[in-house]
Amino acid sequence: MNAYLQEMKNALTSYYSAARSCAQKVQEARKMYQDDVAKEAIKKLYSQLEANKAASINTINEVREKAIDAANRWGVLDGDKINDGDMKLLKLDLSAEQFQAIVNRNKNNGTMCHALAQYARKHGAAEAGQADSNISDNLSSVVIPTVEGKITAYNKFADSAISIIRGMEEHENEFGKGFTEFLVDSFGKPDGTNGKLLEAIS
Image (tube, rainbow, N blue to C red; front, side, top):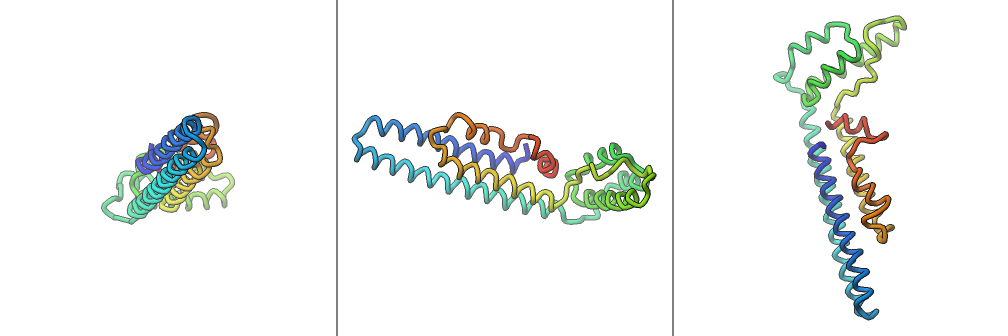
């Protein structure tokens, strides 16, 4: 898993554990104490949980900022990062599979990804103007990492983690089971909706 995504998941999981613990202690307080004492104990428990929630959300936002900063640095063009061998290959007519292999080799190189994106745009335009062109097999199917794509992915994952945290208070009796547990466990894992987001930051 991407390092920044893992940090977000750690913050999410940490809050989930705190919320489960809080829910258990609330149930124990209701059984052990008289109503007035129980209310005071429960108030303190929820107060601590609110502090945990704020800390977890703050951590996720800090990770978001670090990730976006890293994406912007990744995207700064640097002539020393030009891969001459792969640049020579871009003079050829490449299939989508061949082009994908070049993208895979250079996905951590923002300068090369910029050049690859230009290649894909130019050949896509050629395809649009030549229905019988064999320039490539639809390069639009190839996901090329970009600064914008990385920032979009980090924002969506951060927003999702925060949304899960805020949604837990609606299901306090379900901690440790059901849909809440599924959301926490599946955060950042590939599914039918986040494939391109994960490719952008892999």
